Length: 293
Ligand SMILES: C[S@@+](CC[C@H](N)C(=O)[O-])C[C@H]1O[C@@H](n2cnc3c(N)ncnc32)[C@H](O)[C@@H]1O
Image (cartoon, rainbow, N blue to C red; front, side, top):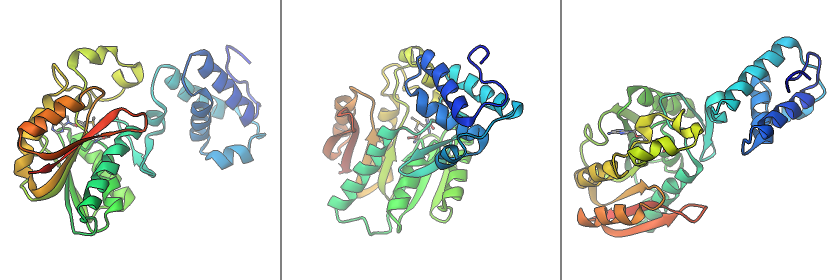
């Protein structure tokens, strides 16, 4: 081993151990998992393939490929960006530099929207859904997966994000039920939606510099920056939501830690009813949902 790197002729299992050790030494949170995913990606092997071929010896070229990807991870690039894919709601989403890597806590938006629809006995209807700030399309496409009669439109201010979402819709088989538009939140949409979902940018501008390098240096700033107090997008969305929603329809918004009360107050002031905060799996109030009116 030279400088912590694996030498020509070593086995896949040994390379995984070496990469994991380098990640551990660098203080990464999940060194073994990251090593497995990166080595597997470099070799075109899934979990089972890595296990099956663990004793296969690797040549110089394969080792150089693994080394290049490991260096990116050591420079702070998240595994999902290196792989170009992230699982959300059990589906594989392509991730490009233009979009946020979908986060597990955002599944709470999907769960809350479904719970609201179930409580209203509306799940089987031909629902119309709008996803404002759709990014990879994760929330919208997860909802369409659960609601086979529904049609949805996702918007984003980034044309490149819209293209990524459209490509995810195509790959996941939702082309006929999903449309996308580049615009300011709901600006290009007419009314009549049964559900408006959103995970808007909600980090206060001054806090962006304090985020982990994985987020600060790799997620697009348009996906993070929520203005001076982090609430700018909610003000715009809540103000416009009444125009977008059908009577009795739902607004479901992801919020940052500590923002649920302020966002609930915005919804209250805009005339929404049945306002509720839903915690994520860590117990943090993560989603504010409400009925209009
Ligand atoms: C936090 S990301 C969420 C992405 C995706 N919905 C998810 O949950 O993974 C916020 C998204 O809103 C988009 N965005 C920011 N400001 C916007 C605006 N004024 N109008 C439309 N989209 C906006 C960003 O480009 C980004 O894709």
